[in-house]
Image 1 (cartoon, rainbow, N blue to C red):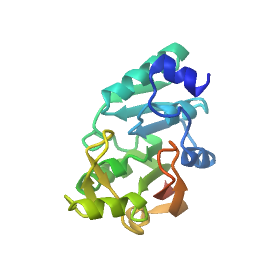
Image 2: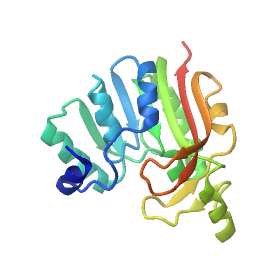
Image 3: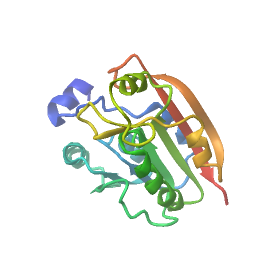
Image 4: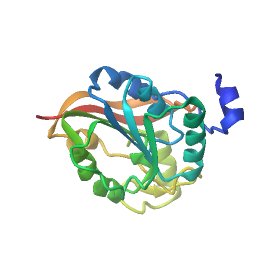
Length: 214
């Protein structure tokens, strides 16, 4: 079904396609249990479900989840469990998942919320399991706009001018790599990428695929 048809039927706000980093990470993702942290409208969850994974998908946006549930119901995607939860306050179970996916979610919170979330998130992946994470970073052209128009509420954190989230955190140089210095780094990137929603010419991103050491 085309995006236009999906948008008309379900009201999706964004193109229903997997993130390029999710596709890149797939060969490194083994096992069956996957946690999609900040699943949004669910495109990445659906992508991994079609590869044979059992998905726990969490997000706090009721509108996103309503559309996601309708899509899963129509396609009988019983391998996806959808929960409405804050990704910061979610009770991450220890050693529960083979893969933890967290794509362009960290940038929609305060820096302090990232610090609160990251330790339990890391503990939730099993030994030998994989974390896939991305965030906007210090290279993003929007950062200059925010620095010129207002003071940060926390380091590199600003009140968002958009409706999708309350805050924007632009991750510092090397911070994502340092956050996972106790993991085996499979892939790491800091640089410019096209906007996957075609809303901006480019973004500055930090990407990581890493494995919890056995």
